[in-house]
Image 1 (cartoon, one colour):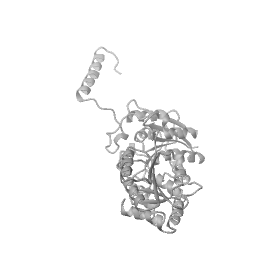
Image 2 (cartoon, helix red, strand yellow):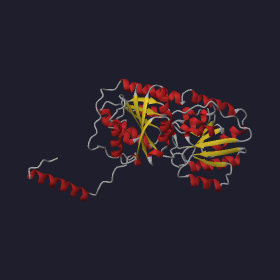
Image 3 (spheres, rainbow, N blue to C red):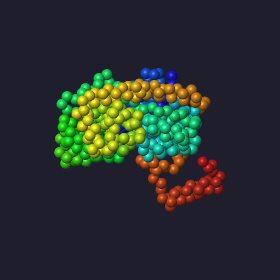
Image 4 (cartoon, one colour):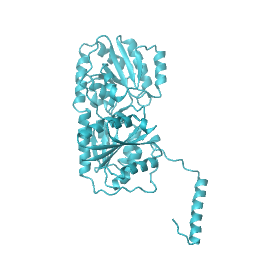
Length: 421
């Protein structure tokens, strides 16, 4: 049986694709005969993390630590793997786990990274751990969308195994039913302006519920922009737009089965799990065109509606769903079929299992994991931001004084004939 360690970050109110993925994939891999352990770096109390609690309930071996500086995080991960090394280590998108890969590869353990979105952070990961120094490169790279995989393939070293594997979603046995009197629109995601453009979304939903009769909207999720979203809706007198707050991953599809459309008007994405979850329930996607994820999921007029802007084009698309006979039913069936035929969590788990077996079968000889006294890290990459915290470096006079004391101590021991450590 292949033994695999997965790494992820975690927090109590974690929502979004990566957090749903780390809770859903391990049980599927276990059914396929793969032994999985989880290593979590938490932004809060580790035992309160949503992934920690979910995976514990599913009887996985889970170790968690509060996020510290990068060198400390790397050391902790190495200490977790050293006693019982895995056959493959999935560093995911976690910067300290990818830096730990240097030491794990020396022990003959293949490393897998995951690119989840078309943004500067993930392109920085690709630059450092896909195209960077050989000692830092991963052995396998998973891209969640066709666009990301095509883009990466242009320059990726041939020694790195590349796979396109979406995060995947469960497909419920039930499906949404056609609207009788009210068309319900759902948004699922973080309430942030960066990427998600949630303030513009709030204005768009206020407008569409005002201009198209019989339309109601629900926003599921939370985030720093929630107070501003609520203020915008109050100013717009948008009584038909409801801020529903966060919903646990395991309860989300029950809410989506009550909806008819799922909206996503982001600036960029990978292959959005929330959109796949809605389509799996039979919700018709109404999305702004972006180059990653949307083109492979939403074929305009076939599996959903693609809009040109958050204004007239969006309003007209919702009006079509509300008024055009038979349109919703046709798109709903096709949207669900698109997920069933390649984006279900079961099919994505099988592709993950194939990659894990391939890397395991082609790995080099295993050796003990060596944990150095000092974790060596390259200079911080500007694209990593807060994902790569480093200890504050003392000013030059303090460093000079400390170095002078160390040098003086060595000379004193040498003159006294004492051993120098």
